[in-house]
Image 1: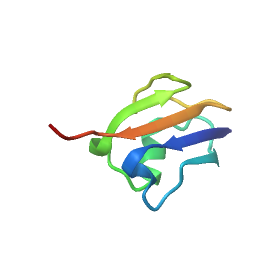
Image 2: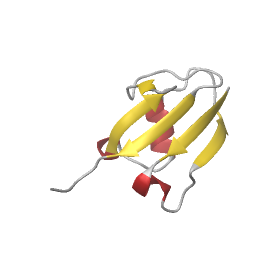
Image 3: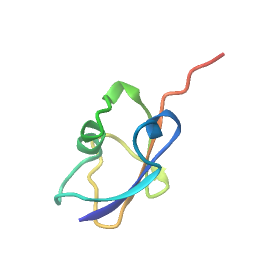
Image 4: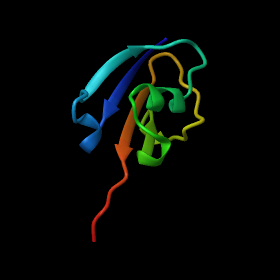
Length: 74
């Protein structure tokens, strides 16, 4: 299956902004996060097709997955 993967803020450092990825059927968001060298603890927001998603969310053909890091400050 083919998905569009969008990375935001610090996740783009040394990576990409938007990319298409070919993945096996049944892949979940967690597998994509780990394949990028990220940890689950670094993930702030997961958006799947413009809606809130979870690390356990299964991806489907032509999905758009957006990953945002945790935001700090004060």
